[in-house]
Length: 105
Image 1 (tube, rainbow, N blue to C red):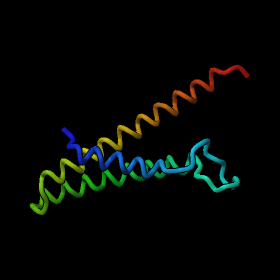
Image 2 (cartoon, one colour; image 1 turned 90 degrees about the horizontal axis):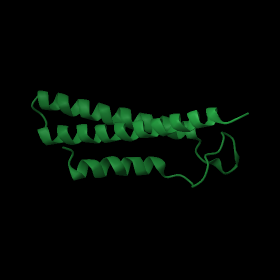
Image 3 (tube, rainbow, N blue to C red; image 1 turned 60 degrees about the vertical axis):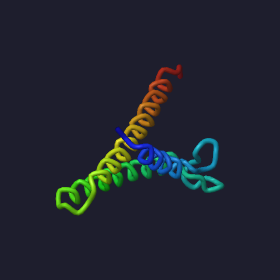
Image 4 (tube, rainbow, N blue to C red; image 1 turned 120 degrees about the vertical axis):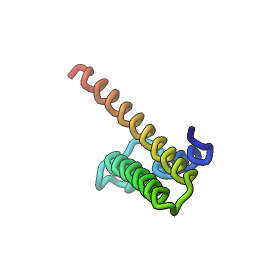
């Protein structure tokens, strides 16, 4: 079971990624320099990959006797939370795309 600290760290990481001006993401080169959706999505995927690498590194450190099992559990919980959040976003994007496809031309 994930610890409260692990969940708080994962949500804090997601909050940092989502800190951007409110409203619709602008196209590349648009005025005001807001982040575009592709860049935000790429950053989120990179953060999830980094969380996975951290959990792998912690597992290797425990196997070598250099780390604590609690650190591994925390890293895995953070990784799991990040993956779940990314999957939720993916599902919402797919649902929105399917809704757009249903619109009459």
